[in-house]
Structure formats: C-alpha cells, structure tokens
Length: 484
Image (cartoon, rainbow, N blue to C red; front, side, top):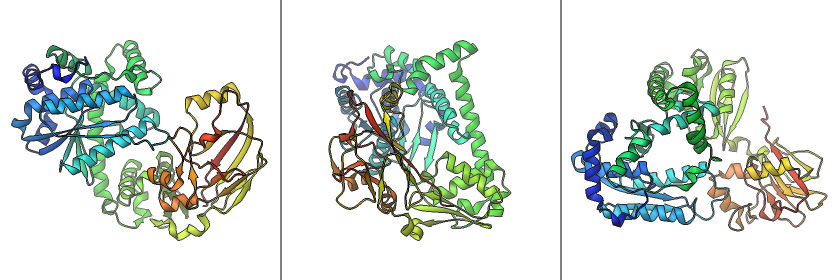
C-alpha cells in the first residue's frame, strides 16, 4: 500500500495496530533495554518494516518512557520515487507530531554504490542521534533479513561475529546503540498486520531488480533453497544467528581474560603471548587491538589472515601497510607506527609510462599500460561494473606514445567518470576520507595535456569514457607491493 499519510488517522491506526499485535511487537530483550531511555531515534525509510516499527513505538511510547525522533535519509537512488519516500516519512512524522530529521545524498558522491549508500545513511543517523542526544537508534530489520545477511557474509567469508548479525542489540564505542526490536517477526506477518489495520507504506520498486544480490536471494535463491530442503531456511538462520551470538560472546570473554593488554590497547603486544592463543581468540584480541588504535578499517579480511599467519609463524620481521600507519612485527613484539617514519620513500617520484612497458614506482608499486581491443567480454565487464577502480581502469586510447606518472599536487583537478563535474582532486580525497599521507602515495596518470586521466581508487576520467564506437582501449593496472 502507498496511500498518502493525510488519508489516514495515523494516531488511531497506531492504536489499532497495537490492539492487534500487542506485546508481540517487540523482542523482550530489546524492550527491556530501551525502557525509560528517553530520547531515541527511529530510522524510517517509509517501507513496511520501518512504518510498522514507528507505529508500534508511537502506540507504546508513553508506557515505555520514550521520546521519539524520526529520521530519514534520501539516497536519491530512484529519483522522484526517493523524494516521494522522504515526503511520506515527513508527513508521517508530522501526523504523529514527532521531530523529523532528514538528509540527502550529496551531488559530489562519485561512483555511488549500495555500500556507499549504507555508509552515508549510517553516518547521517549517528550524527542525527548525537544532535538530539539519543543514546539509541532503532531499526526495522525483521527475521527474513537474517538469512539474506548470513548468505551474503558466508560468500565473503565471515566468523561468528559477522554471522551473528543483524543483532537485536549492538553496541559501538562512542556511538549510539543500535536496537532491532522486530527480528522475531516475519516480513509477511508485518505486512498482514499493516493491511489489517489499513496502514500504508512505500514500496521500493528496486526491490524487484534481481540483478541486486539481496533481491536475488530473497526472490529466487532462498525460495529455491526452501523447496529443495523442505524446510524454512529463514527460521533455521534465525536460530543459528542467536547461537552464533552466544558463541561469539563466550569467545570474546575468553579472549579478554587471556590477553587483557590487547583490550587495554597497549602500544606493544608480546608475540609469545599472541602465539599461544587459539586462532579464534587471537583473531578477536587482534581485532580489538587494531580497533583501539583506529587501524581496523585499514585491515581487510585477507590482510587479517596474513597478519595472524605471520604472528604464528617463525618469520622474524614483517611490515604491513594500514592506511597512514604500518603494523610492525619483529621476533618478539607486535606494534605500529605512523607512516611519517618512512614517508620519504613512499612519496611517488615522477616517471614515464609507455604502453607495454611496466613501471616500478618509487613506493614499490607496479603500474602498467596495455593497449587492448574492446571485445564483447571486456565491454561486458565494463557494463557490469565489476572492474575494481583501485586496481584497474579501462579508458579510450588516443594513440598517445606515453603518459606522465607523478604524485598529487595542490591545484590538481579531476572529473571522474559518472561524477557531476570537475573539481579539485583534494576535494575528492576529502570526500573519500583519504588521509593526507595516503594521498602522497597515490600515482596520478596524466596525458600530454597534463589532464589527470586516472587515480587508483577512482573511476577514470569522464573524457576517457568508452563509447559504443570505441574500438581501441588502454588498460591501466596498479598493483601495490609490500616492501618486506
């Protein structure tokens, strides 16, 4: 349903929903956690789940001692439909006489993806919660979301902490606690209750697009799995999530007991103490230590595996890049240092790049240019968006004999493919939250006119876009090398 909010007596609709659902609306653990919390932020997309959550909270706000604030992030993914979602939620908040906070995706966000959308939305919600002094953010995730999340994370490779998501209660350092009161309810039951009480919601037409992984799971793979097994996999996934959360909590407690210095974020850890830990405990202690020093976001899953393998090995010296820092391992200790300790050899020195001639840069990285024909396979890769811009770019080739490679300089301007316009490269770096030291290590590829045509991590220049009539292209690849 997508009726306009003004056609519904929303306070009465919320009471009708409460009469129908009663105490079953919220998970008991979440209910007790939020009781008497005062100001809380309710994330509302306008979809069925978040509308159910908001209406249920409105009906129970007085008895729970809550002051509700409604927040909506307009990612503009669907143009006018996204604007209509925002207007719907704003009207809903107005009907309930609740404060409404909103924000819209900025124009300058290049290479917009689902991952970027989630990050931008979460950043907005946390800022909104802080501004209203809300200690909790409530989300409308329900039981059927669990198996979708688990399957996506299994494919990536995930430990029990990751497979225990989404959690009913999730704590974060210096950020509001996330609460998900609806994880015990099925999506179908939520919609049935809304329909029975004539409550409308917004339908996201992109949910029918099975080229999006989560939609394909929901509409094709999970139903096929249920049919093949003769069981409801969503219910099994829900139970597994709960058991995995219990296991993760137990392992975390053991890890804290065995290596308290990691949880105290000591600057140096003794390698011998790390080596004797079982891998599951070592992984947790190491993740907490990295997090305490703001390094965890710069250490991906393969890097974490390599770090653990190195700590447990007989290797006596190892250095791993982690953003603007280095993680250092010697025969006895694990520590870290800021990249300033070795900045001089990391700054890119000027070089000339010719097609077919690989160039080893002064930072130890390798960059190559290769003239390629635009085959159907290559065009398919381009159209699918499967090219990783941090490692590769395919650009239109204009028969240039060579290109300039150099470090970023103040005043450099760049127009990435798909971005609304050209602006200072510094501004693109700031938007992507790329540290200053890391900017100095990124090579810029320039043509004979001194135009920046690629920076690893960004799409190539708009001026080098592959057109339908383009036959010849240049494939640029960038590979970082660990110096140790």
